[in-house]
Length: 178
Image (cartoon, rainbow, N blue to C red; front, side, top):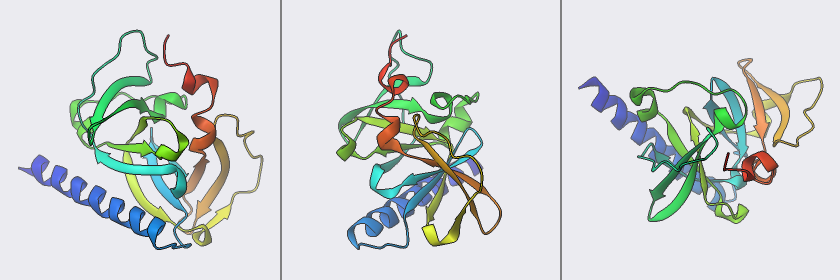
Protein backbone atom coordinates (compact mmCIF):
# COMPACT_ATOMS: atom_id res chain seq x y z
CA UNK A 1 0.00 0.00 0.00
CA UNK A 2 2.81 2.46 0.84
CA UNK A 3 4.58 1.68 -2.44
CA UNK A 4 1.39 2.53 -4.35
CA UNK A 5 1.06 5.88 -2.56
CA UNK A 6 4.76 6.60 -3.13
CA UNK A 7 4.42 5.89 -6.84
CA UNK A 8 1.28 8.03 -7.03
CA UNK A 9 2.93 10.96 -5.25
CA UNK A 10 5.98 10.66 -7.56
CA UNK A 11 3.68 10.75 -10.58
CA UNK A 12 1.89 13.80 -9.15
CA UNK A 13 5.26 15.55 -8.62
CA UNK A 14 6.28 14.74 -12.19
CA UNK A 15 2.98 16.07 -13.50
CA UNK A 16 3.30 19.30 -11.47
CA UNK A 17 6.91 19.81 -12.63
CA UNK A 18 5.95 19.16 -16.24
CA UNK A 19 3.15 21.75 -15.96
CA UNK A 20 5.49 24.30 -14.36
CA UNK A 21 8.16 23.59 -16.96
CA UNK A 22 5.67 24.18 -19.78
CA UNK A 23 4.31 27.32 -18.08
CA UNK A 24 7.83 28.70 -17.59
CA UNK A 25 8.54 28.24 -21.30
CA UNK A 26 5.24 29.49 -22.70
CA UNK A 27 4.69 32.40 -20.33
CA UNK A 28 8.18 33.78 -20.87
CA UNK A 29 8.90 33.55 -17.17
CA UNK A 30 12.46 34.67 -16.60
CA UNK A 31 12.61 33.67 -12.95
CA UNK A 32 12.87 29.93 -13.57
CA UNK A 33 16.01 29.23 -15.59
CA UNK A 34 16.99 25.76 -14.45
CA UNK A 35 15.51 22.34 -13.89
CA UNK A 36 17.16 20.86 -10.80
CA UNK A 37 17.77 17.10 -10.85
CA UNK A 38 19.79 14.59 -8.90
CA UNK A 39 21.71 11.71 -10.48
CA UNK A 40 24.09 9.41 -8.64
CA UNK A 41 23.76 11.50 -5.48
CA UNK A 42 24.93 14.68 -7.24
CA UNK A 43 22.91 17.80 -7.93
CA UNK A 44 22.66 19.18 -11.46
CA UNK A 45 21.09 22.25 -13.05
CA UNK A 46 19.79 21.73 -16.58
CA UNK A 47 18.87 24.85 -18.59
CA UNK A 48 15.10 24.85 -19.10
CA UNK A 49 15.50 25.46 -22.82
CA UNK A 50 17.40 22.15 -23.12
CA UNK A 51 14.97 20.05 -21.09
CA UNK A 52 12.00 18.30 -22.63
CA UNK A 53 9.16 16.32 -21.12
CA UNK A 54 9.45 14.37 -17.89
CA UNK A 55 8.15 10.81 -17.67
CA UNK A 56 7.96 8.27 -14.85
CA UNK A 57 10.23 5.25 -15.22
CA UNK A 58 9.02 2.84 -17.86
CA UNK A 59 10.39 -0.38 -19.17
CA UNK A 60 13.40 -0.25 -21.43
CA UNK A 61 14.20 -2.62 -24.27
CA UNK A 62 17.89 -3.38 -23.91
CA UNK A 63 20.25 -3.10 -26.85
CA UNK A 64 23.13 -5.57 -27.21
CA UNK A 65 26.73 -4.41 -27.45
CA UNK A 66 25.99 -0.97 -26.04
CA UNK A 67 27.93 1.03 -23.46
CA UNK A 68 26.92 0.30 -19.86
CA UNK A 69 25.37 3.78 -19.53
CA UNK A 70 23.12 3.22 -22.57
CA UNK A 71 20.28 1.15 -21.19
CA UNK A 72 18.32 0.72 -24.42
CA UNK A 73 15.23 2.26 -25.95
CA UNK A 74 11.80 3.15 -24.58
CA UNK A 75 8.60 4.26 -26.22
CA UNK A 76 7.49 7.61 -24.77
CA UNK A 77 4.29 8.98 -26.27
CA UNK A 78 4.90 6.72 -29.27
CA UNK A 79 8.43 8.01 -29.88
CA UNK A 80 11.40 5.71 -29.53
CA UNK A 81 14.12 7.32 -27.43
CA UNK A 82 17.49 6.11 -26.26
CA UNK A 83 17.64 5.79 -22.46
CA UNK A 84 20.86 6.97 -20.85
CA UNK A 85 21.89 6.60 -17.23
CA UNK A 86 23.12 10.14 -16.58
CA UNK A 87 25.13 9.21 -13.48
CA UNK A 88 26.99 6.42 -15.31
CA UNK A 89 27.61 8.59 -18.38
CA UNK A 90 29.19 11.24 -16.16
CA UNK A 91 31.41 8.67 -14.47
CA UNK A 92 29.67 7.96 -11.16
CA UNK A 93 27.42 4.95 -11.73
CA UNK A 94 25.19 3.64 -8.98
CA UNK A 95 23.63 0.24 -8.46
CA UNK A 96 19.89 0.25 -8.82
CA UNK A 97 17.22 -2.09 -7.59
CA UNK A 98 13.78 -2.50 -9.15
CA UNK A 99 12.37 -0.32 -6.35
CA UNK A 100 14.92 2.46 -6.85
CA UNK A 101 14.25 2.36 -10.61
CA UNK A 102 10.55 2.85 -9.93
CA UNK A 103 11.46 6.11 -8.19
CA UNK A 104 13.53 7.47 -11.08
CA UNK A 105 12.32 9.70 -13.89
CA UNK A 106 13.13 10.02 -17.54
CA UNK A 107 14.04 13.54 -18.62
CA UNK A 108 13.70 13.80 -22.38
CA UNK A 109 16.28 16.00 -24.03
CA UNK A 110 14.60 18.87 -25.84
CA UNK A 111 13.89 17.79 -29.45
CA UNK A 112 15.44 21.07 -30.65
CA UNK A 113 18.82 19.51 -29.82
CA UNK A 114 18.04 16.83 -32.45
CA UNK A 115 18.71 13.84 -30.19
CA UNK A 116 16.04 11.26 -29.41
CA UNK A 117 17.19 10.51 -25.90
CA UNK A 118 16.03 10.56 -22.31
CA UNK A 119 18.21 10.79 -19.22
CA UNK A 120 17.58 8.65 -16.17
CA UNK A 121 17.56 10.96 -13.15
CA UNK A 122 17.18 9.77 -9.58
CA UNK A 123 15.16 12.72 -8.37
CA UNK A 124 13.44 15.78 -9.77
CA UNK A 125 14.15 18.68 -7.43
CA UNK A 126 12.07 21.40 -9.07
CA UNK A 127 12.76 24.61 -10.89
CA UNK A 128 15.46 27.08 -9.83
CA UNK A 129 15.93 30.75 -10.50
CA UNK A 130 19.29 32.22 -11.35
CA UNK A 131 18.63 34.87 -8.72
CA UNK A 132 18.60 32.21 -6.00
CA UNK A 133 22.06 30.89 -6.92
CA UNK A 134 25.58 32.18 -6.40
CA UNK A 135 28.58 31.06 -8.44
CA UNK A 136 31.06 29.09 -6.35
CA UNK A 137 34.52 30.65 -6.61
CA UNK A 138 37.21 28.43 -8.01
CA UNK A 139 38.15 26.59 -11.10
CA UNK A 140 35.45 26.21 -13.74
CA UNK A 141 35.44 22.85 -15.58
CA UNK A 142 36.56 23.08 -19.20
CA UNK A 143 32.99 22.29 -20.28
CA UNK A 144 33.95 19.68 -22.86
CA UNK A 145 31.64 17.12 -21.25
CA UNK A 146 28.84 19.62 -20.76
CA UNK A 147 29.75 20.38 -17.17
CA UNK A 148 29.70 24.08 -16.38
CA UNK A 149 30.37 26.05 -13.26
CA UNK A 150 29.37 25.16 -9.74
CA UNK A 151 26.56 27.07 -8.06
CA UNK A 152 25.42 27.29 -4.47
CA UNK A 153 21.91 27.97 -3.22
CA UNK A 154 20.72 29.71 -0.06
CA UNK A 155 20.75 26.40 1.86
CA UNK A 156 24.40 25.82 0.97
CA UNK A 157 23.72 23.00 -1.50
CA UNK A 158 26.05 22.87 -4.47
CA UNK A 159 24.79 22.40 -8.02
CA UNK A 160 26.75 21.48 -11.15
CA UNK A 161 25.62 23.17 -14.32
CA UNK A 162 24.91 20.60 -17.05
CA UNK A 163 24.80 21.87 -20.64
CA UNK A 164 22.91 19.18 -22.58
CA UNK A 165 23.66 20.85 -25.91
CA UNK A 166 27.38 20.27 -25.33
CA UNK A 167 26.91 16.85 -23.69
CA UNK A 168 25.02 15.36 -26.65
CA UNK A 169 27.84 16.34 -29.00
CA UNK A 170 30.66 14.73 -27.02
CA UNK A 171 32.40 11.68 -28.49
CA UNK A 172 31.45 9.68 -25.35
CA UNK A 173 27.75 10.41 -25.82
CA UNK A 174 27.84 9.68 -29.54
CA UNK A 175 29.69 6.37 -29.08
CA UNK A 176 26.84 4.15 -27.90
CA UNK A 177 28.36 0.87 -29.06
CA UNK A 178 31.15 -0.81 -27.11
